[in-house]
Length: 263
Image 1: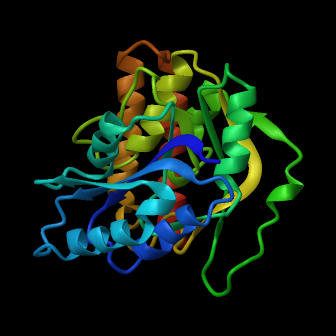
Image 2: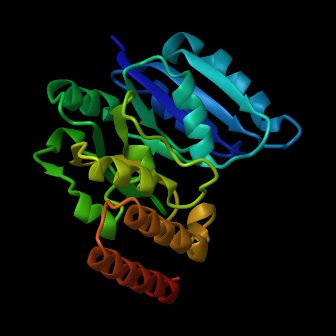
């Protein structure tokens, strides 16, 4: 049995973590039909691409692993779009190269979406692993939360590595946008009327804080500019009115200042 899911993993100089991420895909109780590893122009003399090819040989029989190589680095949104364009399955799931899935993640999430065909996007909660690896209890899931467009104005309700969506939704990640590009996609879908649900279980593990450490999340001001540009785009598109735009902008700046203090 395999889930009709295409898993997309952006890869940029990720040799220290990608093996763990791919192993967590291969360990799924319901493995995906295909996995697309997208080398996002790593420019490291082929080191990343060589490792991806070794992983392809190792896991080919288990998860149908494919490699896409981009000539230029375009950021995670561009890499995800490239994988999305090549995907063959009706569901898309995203995993970042430095994260790890719970073994039951695809089974639980696909089963929910298959049984609720009106839902376009699902995400779930996460845990951050800094010192020791916690025990996740996926079988204890008891609730699902509808995510409103309004809530997505003030908070990204789930990380990208938790998301599964239907491949035919009409929006994609914005090319050239490197920060908060995932949140903007969820916002576009929500304000266009596509139902979004969060599964109240932690099915992905992060090995760094959501902000304030290495990677894009460490660039606090760039992340803040990304969030603010989302609000501007939604306002110009007529998705939100002036009052909501002002309220969400003030709230976003307040969050940014708090993060500066914390970090």
